[in-house]
Length: 348
Image 1 (cartoon, rainbow, N blue to C red):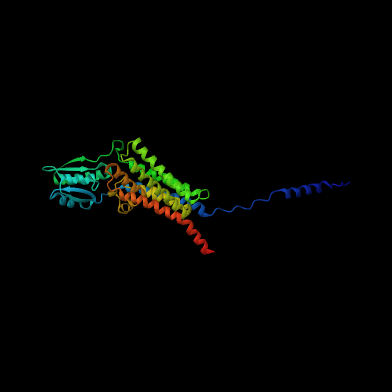
Image 2: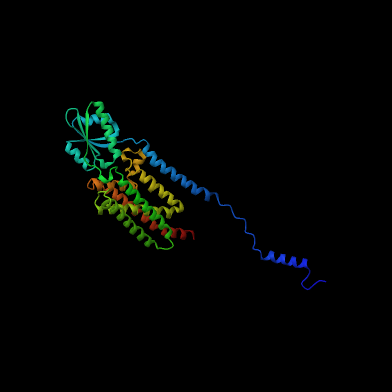
């Protein structure tokens, strides 16, 4: 006999239908990620590693001297050196050994060569100009002296400080400050929705000053590796940090996600590799020499060296270069919202 609830098969069918209705719908088939999502990070990483190794290893593989400035005294010696060494040196005749040494101490030249008696030459170098450069000069003058049958006496009249025997403190300082500015600028890109533009500018400027101050105090008074006056050094490193931070902010603002890798290539890779600290600028290939003093790390290394060992000689141009990087990048970042509004209004 059937009950009001129906037969057992009917009840099973009812329960099965209810279960089907209560089961969540099967998720739609997920779309396959676009090829760009896989390709872009891989290509960017490969470009960065190739550029980094190519710059740092490639530039040190076979450095060649090119017009290294040398002050040479005597009536015949300048012409003989010029004829023997060709365009590897830039011979600058000097009226006396004292005048040549004065040019060396002002960093107008990196070495001074004079006659020091019969078959005797005296070579004075500035170790602070960089070990790679001074070593190249010693080798070149030594080769000339061997061919001419003369003996060379060498003296370092502007030596490196005791705590920077290899002359790399300026490079590491510039690299560290550039890296800190790069990190600062890249982190600021994520604060667009939290801070107004003027507040982000104050953040970049204030943090750059803090970076420059900390770096100068640690490398200078604390470690004694950079004997530059503290206040000018703080100012220089603040400009370097600001140049790196605002430039990174600029590239990230205008180029989007690709801007950070571009900043890495320009500032951290090409900038530091061509700075002239690890390999003297006079030993770099032509293309690297052309950009060495124009990029922030190269400008900073020149300013740090001038402040540390040459009484501030030739520091004005590097400092102006750093200031221009920071100011121009800041102006372009500030113009970005106005350009976006104009573009939106024109499209409407």
